[in-house]
Length: 329
Ligand SMILES: NC(=O)c1ccc[n+]([C@@H]2O[C@H](COP(=O)([O-])OP(=O)(O)OC[C@H]3O[C@@H](n4cnc5c(N)ncnc54)[C@H](OP(=O)(O)O)[C@@H]3O)[C@@H](O)[C@H]2O)c1
Image 1 (tube, helix red, strand yellow):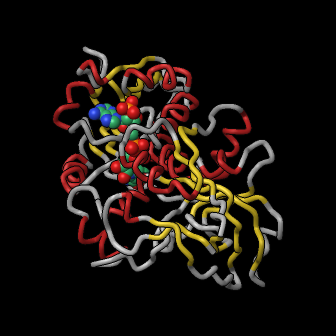
Image 2 (image 1 turned 90 degrees about the vertical axis):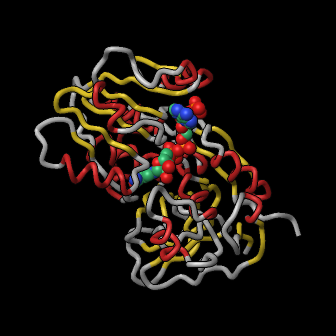
Image 3 (image 1 turned 120 degrees about the horizontal axis):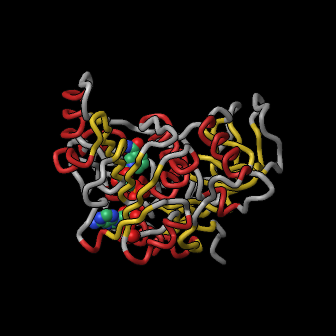
């Protein structure tokens, strides 16, 4: 089968389209013909071996110390079940499914991917295209975990989301709004309208030099970009406000430990997981019209390098999707 392959760490150009063996399906797995897959921040970080502060060695131990152990990137996919292992009960041949592979395994940027039935995989509703479904897992699960679970957003909370138009930001804005928060989204000029349309009550254009509203305090500051610090945000947090960096390293882990038992302003270090529960919760919100996937661009598999560049540029508006159609021989 054809797949997007990388044999060494490096810039987008290290990814090429080539032939690899089609995965064998094990007893507890399904084989999915991938129609669409997302290129996410995790994909460019794994391709470049670029990990947030202090996690470089741990990241390389996970992926391969000197070169990637698994040459096929990609976690988020949508497609059709074409084979099932003998123990599989949740899925049948022909089912439209979407989800995320185990991050240790990856392999979704290919014509076929094998996933465990117990992985974060769900049926794709008829109302969603494969591209829309592939746009959900990474940003949706992260947005849900950080806003609902780690941020514990309640009705009436004032929430500031820095990077409101990015892969995670577009979901965070919608979920915070759905939970009843007063949402302020920070992005550049060209994305102000998008962020407003996703439900933000207020928008701030960071190109003016502002990262929040002067004089206002927030119950939660969620920074998806890594352009703020706890020290810099303290004055903008309410008395018990929470600073929640999505992109946190060892420094933020230390601050989180130091403030864990504080009755005042706190930092939380958290890592989200792609879960089936998360996908099901997101589908319920999508069905109700509360949230929706946002797709910035769709590339054919042959333009995988352009898709990687787009995502690594860190100015995407929502998801970047690749259609996994094989190249003509
Ligand atoms: N801890 C976890 O569990 C977890 C989970 C998921 C992701 N992450 C990490 O979280 C980070 C964010 O992921 P993502 O996929 O959402 O990133 P992304 O899509 O690359 O984010 C792009 C966003 O950042 C904004 N932005 C760029 N430069 C900015 C600046 N100088 N000031 C303010 N905003 C700026 C962009 O706005 P404009 O386009 O308008 O400029 C856009 O909204 C990544 O580093 C990822 O590794 C961590």
